Image (cartoon, rainbow, N blue to C red; front, side, top):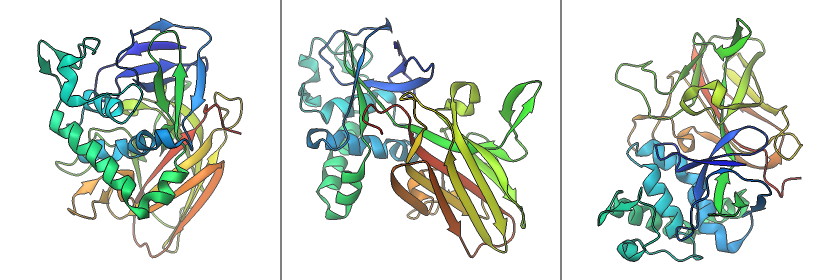
Length: 327
């Protein structure tokens, strides 16, 4: 594998395994020396189903929604939250000035380079959410993270976020078909855009017949070259009913097909979903209105009724492709 620094809105580190795909990564040992570059013989483990990892598993499952609702949530805050939720090694954000080994991208010259109160608020949110009975099912079904142990800091990476997009081949290169799919950071509606990658698709008019979209994972900034094609989405809109089938068709790091661990689907007359609380447009998957947790399935279908006129849709998934415990 190869580890690189990446202190920006996406992640704190990146890791490229021998499948050639670059993924976001985070360190879990703030007190260990960093190790960058090419490393051989790394060992992979899964946190799924382990009680000691449930706080971190839950936080990482809601991280993208938190980031969508708060675009100012940075990689530095996310990294400190991760340290705060792990018992070994213990970490106390109020004692950060005492930690000589702390990364200078986090704390430098006597100052925290992140929002300390925001870290505390999110840690408190995670703990209170986990205490609620209604979240127990979700917590128990969380697919977990992949821990990568190496000669320096132990790091974690997570299952890939994926979105459906219409593509076309131009001069032998696969590119986004902008007549059918638009990145979240574009202004389709005046004054509305999002600091997040992913695509809204449409408008669709019925009857559409079967339409095929690609599902891309890890395509940061809507750049297909950064992502991995993991499957396809079959879409049919007719007589007010939208039928959408996710199909995983490609092989991941484990040598088996990618699988689905979560799916979220939005469909409506606007390009984006509306936040149930504020009514503002959002691309947070938890607001899409149709969602399901899965146990590593390769195919899943939604059927949405009661639609009318031209519609848009957003198809999101969380995809497992290299978890060492996957079947």
